Image 1: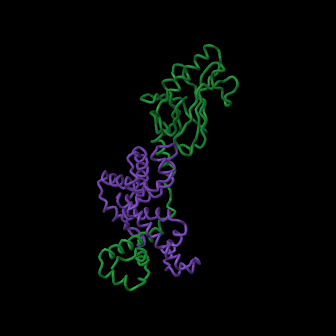
Image 2: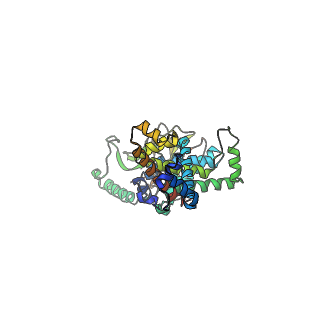
Image 3: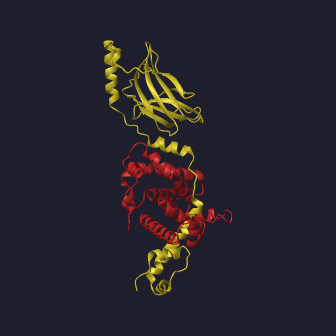
Length: 212
Length: 185
């Protein structure tokens, strides 16, 4: 005879009696259908076990933060160089209208470049290069940073080998003077790291962005 | 056999394409299952969380090597997690059977479960979640509440024939997913 109906086998695997004698008889003589039934019973057993596996807890949020820090893009962008060249030319010509003016800056200030900082799921921020009459600062504003175990530090990074510490970030905000000898076309990556207290070298990167 | 890849959802597609935010979406969907399998494989919780981290970082970096025809994204992730967990154990000079023995020293109700069995449960749990709602409801009454099709009909008010056909179709679909993903392991 033909093999047992798969639907009937499914019901049997769920523990229901075989609905007709011909199926029972067939199973006695057909190894393939018996194996089929055994596989379905195994599936039912696993299915029943899933009762205890619903609503599994997610890992602690730090696990995601570490993943985000490790997978954060950190490729330099050419645009920044071009933009700085425009800004420099504009400054020379005294044509301030050519640079981006951000409402975050006061009237005497110009935002010449900025970076969106990303890496942590929970935190978002920006770093702006703000030029005033007498100096240039990196203005960092970040929302949603968890309380640090040690402290957060802001760095400029050339994307390859050298990191320059600019200063400590407290309360998610800081105006950090950019030393006059630092070329932001080279140090185009803004990095925020978690540092142990007293740690001199760069700790764990939590947020990064490219100035542009 | 129907491949899991036939119904590639948007999240999986955007993950493979490397779109922004896709890793987070995949993490939110699958991190609990990855952690569950890692914790079933390793005696230390911090080690299990480290495995979750390396699994998603590895998956993101190697996303182009994911082949939907060989199984679901979930199974791919769980396979990576299992390999990482075994690596961690080896680096600590342990053997997997020792871990299973360690787990078994818990309370009597806390039976040791082979990590592969936990993987199976994750696969079936996801497949159940993807069933059409009426099939899912009827099948869960059979699985979790151990109701016969007659009892399910009485509970839900559905005709007996409808209950039977939901049970059959639900089981057939679960089995297709189960076997498609079994090929990846």
